[in-house]
Image 1 (cartoon, helix red, strand yellow):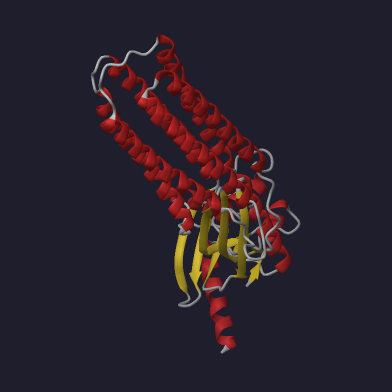
Image 2: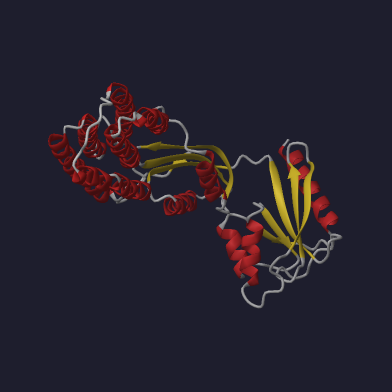
Length: 413
């Protein structure tokens, strides 16, 4: 078994993630300052609680920055990096969301419902603050998705949730002015929403810490990218997991080719395709080994659907896909497929070759000699043999191959 050496980690948008994290810290400090000023001027207990909540956000931003810094470090003890520190930071943020929900409920239950008349500019200032966390949080989530940063997304979700807490403060202050405890009902609803968001972030972070597989859609896309390579016969094992905002992929692949240099180049090409589709891949490990042949799959050019072999590869309207079981020496599968490129004016030979390679044949049979021609080169590059045959029908060709393989087995014994 052979392994392709992992390349150096590709440059990612770490700088932009850190920049947004710093913006988050400055935003929270400014927001906390504004709320503490309004509290000092108005004496509102709701504003005091919200200011304390924003100070918790400051601690969350500090945790995010520290987590990002540590996650980029590598050492002999942690050769794969400390990317999961980001997920620890997102879990810490989820816990802060739970604390926030508790604070809201506590404030709603203990708040004073005596009429309090605030000066007009205080209510206007509180109303003006409401959309700011949502706008900044949406910006964070967008950058977090672009860079694949779970902690940045978690911090953005927390900021968008702050819109609800700021709205609760405003409603509480208005309701308190008329001695109507509307804030208690709103607090219960908001607390449930925040708990739900915190739980989703917590579960996502724990999945990564426990090395859970990526979702089925992502895994399916990676599998399809690998199987698109004509040299690949099968995938024995495919594992993909997240670590922080990075993706790790490991695959055990069966190649039809035996040349180690070609196999290495094929592995590099597959890795490049995976990185192109998933920019946040840190490492792709492809273990490859030659195929243990239990069956042979043939493709033959046909003149008609009844099984008459075609004289010319590109002009043949049909192809037969035939599979022979080498263990029991019997016909395992036979399929007639239409040639979708026979009417093309230019380049149809190569297009037909690429089309047939999707069926993973081992040998191509044609009454025409493909040596030195475009399709012949394409098949050879993929490790597929081409043979010119004198057989007239598909049945004759299959019988000849069965007799030949049977004779080879008897000669070995």
